[in-house]
Image (cartoon, rainbow over all chains, first blue to last red; front, side, top):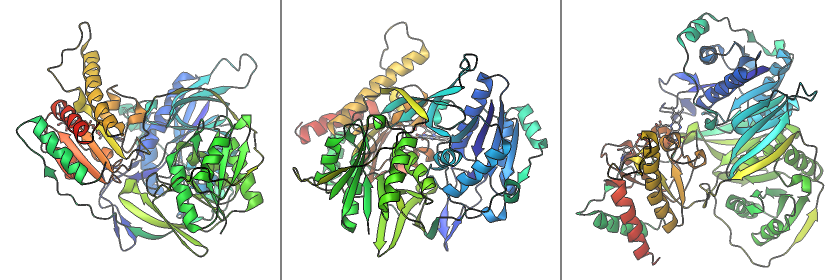
Amino acid sequence: MKIIACIKQVPDSEAKIKAENGQINTGDAPLVINPFDEYAVEGALQQREAVSGSTVTALCIGPESAKEALKHALAMGADDAILVSDPALNDLDTVGAARVLAAAIQKVGGVDMVVFGRQTLDNGSGLTSAQTARALGWSLLGLAGQIKVDTLSESKGEERSVSVERVIEEGRQSVKANLPAVISVVQSIGEPRYPSFMGIRKASKAEIPVWSLSDLGIAAPDAIITRSELMNPPARDTSVEIISGESAAEIADKLADKLIAEKVL
Amino acid sequence: MKIFVYIDHFKGEAQATSWEALGLAKSFGATTALVFGSSVDDVAKAALEYGADDVLVADDPALLDFRAETYASTLSAIASSRTPDLILFPTTTRTREFAAMSAVDLNTNVITDATAVEVNGDSIVVTRPIYEGKLFEKVTASAKPQLITLRGRAFPKPEKTAGKTGTITKVEAKTDALTTVEGYSVADVGVSLNDAGVIVSGGRGVSNNPSLQPPAGLDDKQAEIWRAHQGFKLVGELASTLGGAVGASRAAVDGGYIPYSNQVGQTGKVVAPDLYIACGISGAIQHLAGIRSAKMVVAINKDPDAPIFKVARYGVVGDLFQIVPALTEAFKKKLGK
Ligand SMILES: Cc1cc2nc3c(=O)[nH]c(=O)nc-3n(C[C@H](O)[C@H](O)[C@H](O)COP(=O)(O)OP(=O)(O)OC[C@H]3O[C@@H](n4cnc5c(N)ncnc54)[C@H](O)[C@@H]3O)c2cc1C
């Protein structure tokens, strides 16, 4: 199987992020692979192990510096990586990103499975996997906590299919589709493996090809969604009142009175 | 302005945020509700009672199970022929997926997780959180229809007018499917975390009661999970006394104490209750990412230096195994339950 894991580079989740003069200030936070996309790489690697002869390619849209995120995927075990980078891609929204990713996936050719993380830490809208599936005309198996490719269907002369357990509000839903398919994964897929020493060495030497829009043969998609203002969240009252007392019952009694008076019940 | 509101439901049970979306839409003008599924008359009638002026229903056995591609095609067909300016959705796992796809069909895009929507004539400006709620942005879409998913509990829920009626019109369902739904294992989740006014959450601390003696024959890991279940029983009793939902930290989920669907935080759910009671949760930044919109946080933790106290309004430094059941008792008495 030819598997692609789509990843993005974002500021680390511990970063202190502020709006300053209409700009986003991420301080000295390091840029890292989007934590949700580490699960995508993990899910892709699991499928490579499950179906012999498979390969995993990490794919990212971003500036030259995003090669570091791709190197993390390589260090985890991805076979190769592609960066799509073009100055015209600075204002991408999710539909734009999906159209560019779809073009890159078509250019790779012969892809069976594309794996995404649930959402990114920065924009957080969680739309790109579904939009890429739609742009490709492939099925979407979203929010998978478990993936299983039916390796026997081919020998039965059927198309190769994949089943996933979707994690939804109400529990789990099992859904099946023929390949090629786009899958988004959640944390239940399993903890992302740590980069191995060998993997880190391989990644540090890797030559990552960079594709421009002209390599993909498409024009820059227009951004449909534009930002007009950036705001810090309203300041919170951060003073804590510690409730104490002689016994658990006394503390509970005082706390219950406070909460009833606050009208939050 | 022509406004549609998509009513999301699971097996005929509408998400409360759907009604919040209807309420918001009605503040802008006449509103048409959209209901998709199979045998969904009751949902359509409820939409009228919650304020919709009329309802378009795509009712087809092939829409019984949600599938992003059929729901997206159905929505795209309706939007192309009826040209709404604005379609509002509650933010759920389903709407994120099929609104996303429909946006590709319609050459527009979706604005997700809206916490405020301002309409000035033809222009619609949406406020939404980014960077896990560390910032907010105001955004506008340049294409029509504007597709906006609303964050749960960010907008007031309208009153229901029992018996209010209106026109219910059948529209065509698009049923070309790429995926097959094979089944469900539906968890008994009780009150949903998305809709809950009160959430009581447990962390790694719920397994930390050395005085509890587990049944013989359990290994260390099993004994830990057994202890955690005793802890979550107390958390659950407090939650149900307050009519609330049960949440958890990732440490509790990874420990096997409780399913992932209960997880609150960066890689779990983002919640917005009026009251969030954290029991035995340290308050890691990834957990806090899920509770930034909580109106009030209460922390119960043994460690006075736990970071959770920095975001809490009230705190108790103590053992949750003593405090939580005492709190349940106190509320039972005071709330007359
Ligand atoms: C990429 C990434 C994503 C993550 N996503 C999430 C997420 O979505 N949600 C999430 O929660 N975490 C998430 N985490 C994990 C997070 O960093 C913390 O590890 C986790 O939240 C810790 O859970 P905890 O507070 O239950 O456990 P701990 O940090 O171990 O805290 C347990 C607390 O319980 C207290 N305690 C112990 N016994 C008692 C007792 N008897 N009575 C009272 N108090 C007691 C202790 O004092 C301590 O403060 C993520 C981490 C990463 C790296």
